[in-house]
Image 1 (cartoon, each protein chain N blue to C red):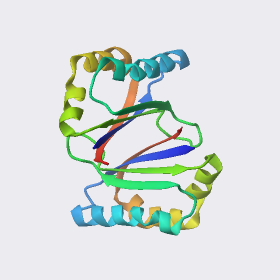
Image 2: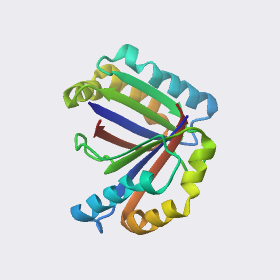
Image 3: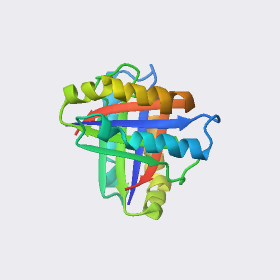
Image 4: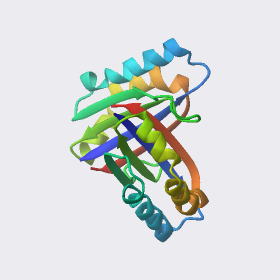
Length: 97
Length: 97
């Protein structure tokens, strides 16, 4: 199994309402793009200064299922509309579970 | 429950052997520092260009247990010896499970 983990840091262009809208759009992804076995999007808990603002954790049965998700046109459209315009930084890892 | 997720990007100062040694040192942390319920350290699977190099995922029963771990002197010593000298970038999130 492949776990895909993304950290998002929003830019100042994204106010609280916009950040909540982006998190909601990311949470709708598993309804729109098939292939994930588990899918969590959560805001940072605010325990430590300097953290990223939100995390996405998605599990896939194998690397091929992850690649299909990553390159799915609906997924790319959601990123283009809801993520990229508000992104200051992004960090990603995929690892074998 | 609090999940703590860190992405590490190693600097060029860290060759493959050094990166493996750092991952091994991080994997020993739950034996040395109490409080975590689950603890995983994994290298990036190499599926996507531009990813971070490794991920640490650790679960704690609550924010207080996470804070005790984060500020434990043994933990801080492991970071000072095995992580910080080889770190190009770090991204962290804690979120409510």
